[in-house]
Length: 180
Image (cartoon, rainbow, N blue to C red; front, side, top):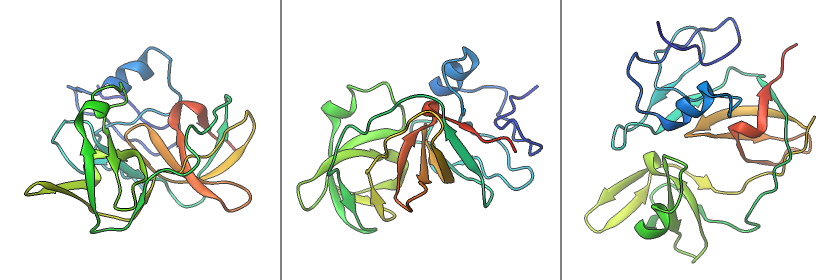
């Protein structure tokens, strides 16, 4: 029997074999919102964009999905990488190996700013890595009780919008789905 990714009426099942470390962490109770390489059922997309490492995930939340801060999280970088689709980035393999967050790699943009970038959003062309969609690595601070509109998730992080309209990334373990 597959796992259920969302504690809502929408069912998304992960395949029987999962090579995803974040899913294992979720089973152990260390994460609030698991990510999975599941099957589309209902209105939630939970499907891999790339199988290069077997764990890069992109999923879109249904319109109006809210998440609530469950723990304090402070963004680590004030002015991280921000690139447009088609920009070439420099991938730093050594720094990328230093994290246990699967699906993200350390990149430098054309303007010299650096940050964690979804590996699934990169395509290798010769010696260059090209970003496939507009991307900013800006993260938002989270406090318990903060409410965010969830747009989509990628490899353990959610792209959200706060009450002031600021958009950015938050770790999925720092928030929980709002139950109305």
